[in-house]
Amino acid sequence: MAKTKENRRVKRKDRILDAAEALFAKHGFDGVSMRMVAVKAEVDLALASYHFGNKRGLFDAILLRRAGVLNQTRLEALEKCQQEAGEAGPTVEAIIDAYLKPLLAFGYEEDEGWRHYFELVAQVNNSPEWGGQLMTKYFDPLARRFMDALKKALPDSEPQNLYWAYHFLSGALTLTFANTGRIDKLSDGIARSKDMVGAYERMVPFITAGFMQICTKK
Amino acid sequence: MAKTKENRRVKRKDRILDAAEALFAKHGFDGVSMRMVAVKAEVDLALASYHFGNKRGLFDAILLRRAGVLNQTRLEALEKCQQEAGEAGPTVEAIIDAYLKPLLAFGYEEDEGWRHYFELVAQVNNSPEWGGQLMTKYFDPLARRFMDALKKALPDSEPQNLYWAYHFLSGALTLTFANTGRIDKLSDGIARSKDMVGAYERMVPFITAGFMQICTKK
DNA sequence: TTCATTTTTCAATGACTGTTGAAATTTTGA
DNA sequence: TCAAAATTTCAACAGTCATTGAAAAATGAA
Image (cartoon, rainbow over all chains, first blue to last red; front, side):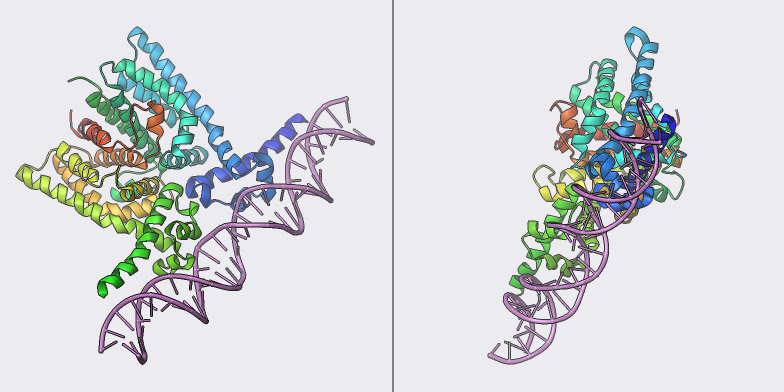
C-alpha cells in the first residue's frame, strides 16, 4: 500500500520538523541540539541528519515548510482586494488588512505548529546574523508585491518613507508574533500576548494611520 | 598607584564585556562560547568565569551595563518635556519624541559598542525565552513611566489600546535597532539600516499617528 | 622591603556537540 | 515471494563545551 508507506515515511519526518520547530522557536538555532530534537520527536538521533542532511538543512526545511502556504495565502488576499478595488487600486487600509488578516486564519492560539513558526520568524527577523539573508529569501518577493500596491495607493510619497513605514510594520508584527509574554506583564494582564485578534484589530488602524501620516503630502 | 591598578583591573574586564557584547549581539547567547569571547578579548579562557561567575552572569552584566545609562537618559527626557508642558501634560508626540530622541545621542553609526548593545536588545526583545523576563526586568520600570504619561495625554483611551500601541512601538523600534540589513535589500539601497536619524524622523510621526488613531474617541 | 589580596594563567575535568559509516529493518514495486 | 530501495538503528568519531581547582603573577598597603 502506497498510502501506508507515505504515512509512515511522512510521520517521522514531520515529527522531527514539529519538534525542531518548537525547539528552535524557543531557544534559537544554537540553543538546540540534534539530540534535543531526537528526544522530543521520539526518534533516533541519526534520523534527522539522514532526512535533512545536517542541522542547518533541518532549520531551512522548517522555514520553508510554511513559507509557501503563508505567502500564497497573503498573495491571494492582496489580489482579491486589488480586484475588488478596480482601476483606482485599493486603499492603504485595505492593503494593510490584506497583509495582516490572513495570519488570523492559522489559528494562533489553537495551532501550536503555526505559533511556533511565527515565533521562529520573529527571532529570525530580528537577528543580525540571519535576518537580512533569510527574511529576504523567504519573504521579500511577497513584500515587494505589497510595496508596489502601497506605492500606487500613496503616489506622492518619497520611496524612502514607504520603506521605513513597511519596516515599522514588520517590526510591530513580528514582536506581536514573538509571544514573549511581555505585554501581559507590562499591562498587568489587561493585554494578552496570544490575543492575535485583539492585536490585529488594533494593528490595522495603527499602521494605516502611520502610513498616511508619513507618506502623504500635507 | 590606585589609578594604575584600577585601569588594569577595568581594562581586561571591559575588554571581555565589549567582546562578548559584540558576539552575543551577532550570534545570540547560545551561539557564543566562552572561548570565542576569550579569543576576541585577547584574554585567558578562565578569566571571564572568574570575573562574572559564569556565562549567564556575563550575559546579564552586558545587559545591565548600559541599561542604567539608557533608562536615565530617557527618564530625563520625559521629565524635561513634562516640565515644559506644565499642568496639562505633554502631547503624545512630545512623549514619543522623548522616548526615541535620546537614542540618537549614543551615536549608533559611530559607536559600535552601543550599536551592538541595541542589536542585542532587539534579539532579547523578540525571544520567547528571554524577552518576557529580561525586558520586563531591565526596561519595564521606565516603560511604565511613559505609559503613565501617555494615559494622561490620551485619557479617553481604553488601557488595552494603549498597551498594544506601545507594543507596536517597541517592535518597530527594536527591529530598526536590530540592524539586519533587510531594509537595505528590500529598498535596493534607498533606505539604510544604519540610518538612525532617518528612522527617528519617520518613526516619531508614524507612531504618534498610530497612537492618535486607536487611542482617541472619534 | 614584606605580606596579604586580587588578578591571571595553566591544565584538566566530564559532559555534550554534529556527523557518519555500517548494519539491521522495513517498505516498495514486480 | 523476491530483490531492490528506502528507512531506521547502533556505535563511534574527533571536537568543543563551561567550569574549576591550584599554581603563578601582579598589585596594594604597610
